[in-house]
Length: 241
Image (cartoon, rainbow, N blue to C red):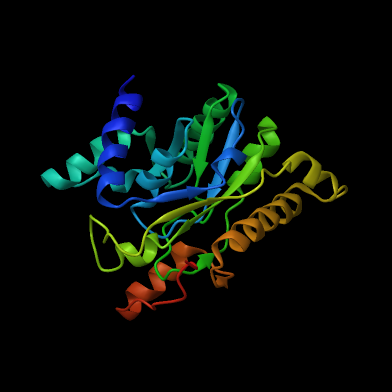
């Protein structure tokens, strides 16, 4: 109930102020478990994408984004919770198992799970190496993976901590669903780790085809650490308009 209310209120405000658009939303199945695998270039992604999708989208969000004592941070955390973003501790061990269990429950209930396979927001607008969690979820549940590309949210949010600019217009591009089980059948004989990486690379290629981003074969978290150590951020190549 709260999700529907929050989606209407927040969605109305976002559309009035920023007027984002979505292309290909009809490619998301109307029922059953679905994984939306998206690039992640802005804080705005986690608000803009779910309000554009007719079905409720459940995200596994990094717990850090729910922290902060300022009224603005608290309000943002409230909005995220209202939009079914579940805080997840990604420090490893039991925390990682909790994230996996949370994702499996969403899919087991026949719902939509939103995932950012890069594992972290891109610091430079480029697409980074995907983690294998999306493939794991899909193979464990049989859920199709729908590639999604967030377009121009990086440029709209560049230099802003909270509210993105109104221009360029933010867009959500939705690709054709991927039958991961059929995809995995093409890698018969692969051991688990190699299979997960092969399937993950196929998913990444589909997302990159939609986004038009430059790809760097390094994890976003590692790139962030390096840039922080250097005291700078590279502009990179933003998603195509």
